[in-house]
Amino acid sequence: MSARTFDAIVVGGGQAGPPLAARLATAGMKVALVERRHLGGTCVNTGCMPTKALVANAYAAYLARRAADYGVMIDAPIRIDFDKVMERARTITRDARGNLDAWIAGLENITLIRGHARFEGPDTLRVGDSLLIAPRIFLNVGGRAAVPDMPGVGDVAFLTNSSLLALDELPRHLLVVGGSYIGLEFAQMFRRFGSQVTVVERMDRLVAREDEEISESLRTILEAEGITIRTKAECISLAMHDGAPAIGVDCAEGPPELVGSHILLAIGRVPNTGDLDLARAGIETDERGYIPVDERLRTRVPGIWAMGDCNRRGAFTHTAYNDFEIVAANLLDGEDRKVSERIPAYALYVDPPLGRVGMTEAEARKTGRRLLVGRRPMTKVGRAVEKGETHGLMKVVVDADTREILGAAILGTGGDEAIHAILEAMNGGMTSDQLRWAVPIHPTVSELIPTLLLDMKLIEPEPVVPEHGLRIPA
Image 1 (spheres, rainbow, N blue to C red):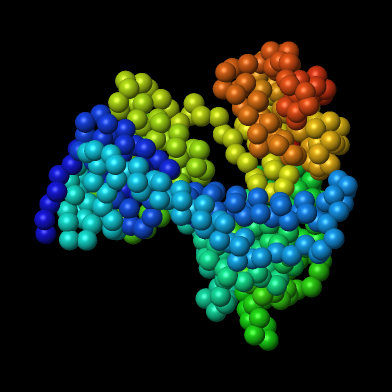
Image 2 (cartoon, rainbow, N blue to C red):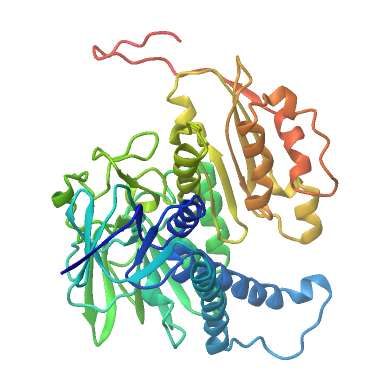
């Protein structure tokens, strides 16, 4: 078996891998970039790019059906060409992947190696018949859809976020198991394409990590479009019913069995770490298969780093890319960047979208602080009224004593963009008093942020309940 030596090996072509390989190569290192299938990772191939293209397609269908509300009369019935819908998403993916392939191919000092990497030792990987040796190894192996060991899962054909993108027919009735980010995005888009859609969620509300009012508003939005939602669904099972896939549920209300044409499992992600032979390098994983890393994304084995979805420090394209930025800054720029300096932020791309940054109110309450909380329905946001899209609300949470902005959510038109005004204020260390004096552009969603801050109400910390059960005043 031949051996090849490099200054660095990057395993995985997702959002952190190629840019890190490029930075290292530009710095004069000889770099191997190993990818078993396609460059671009989940985002380009089965995540952000194709799914957000489908979200845009679905939004066009939604607006076309509402055209009369805007005085635009469409005489013919709205019709969905599902082949064109899917081909548009696939074209966007192919173009992005092709651009990435061409970029990497044009860089000096990088060798792209196609194949499955496995560890032979802490500085050695095997890919096919070749051994790759380097003093620095960076893992960017991503994740995939979780498939739980629920009853009947081996007996019924089901879809994941990846296989759903290969559909060549519109589902008549899509049953979605999982009422969180991925499940809700697909639920709404396929409802807008014309499918009957039912969402089954084990928890008592959708997207349970969000505050209850956000969850309830999301439910209202989706049910208004004709999506059936079943929460508190214990003991979920899969089975065939007269030749059709079905889901068995134990809910507080509603029928115990749901029969559809297709089932989508959207109940979380797992890291792609199980087939890397990590133990041969001395790397241990946690109970869910994630690779523990320190604040600088180093594993416990010197010379090995883990970035992106496999390190449990973030599960988004932007956090993976920031992992690359942290590693590159520390190795090449003489900086000392840490993951803990990153303010968590993300979006849920239902329509209207949810933009979220920092703590929820529930999380902030657990800190024991006195809080200021501001709320504003989108019905009172001029930009939303003018667009005829008034679903949702804006919310901000602030430390009442220091005026530190702790978190915010904007569920409404443009919420995924408007939330950046608060994210950037938090990154810059601005207090709510300082942000309150910003003068945003009119008419925008962001212009209501100062008003939102002015309307905050005080919330005292909840009394502490000690083990003996006596309530202690706050």
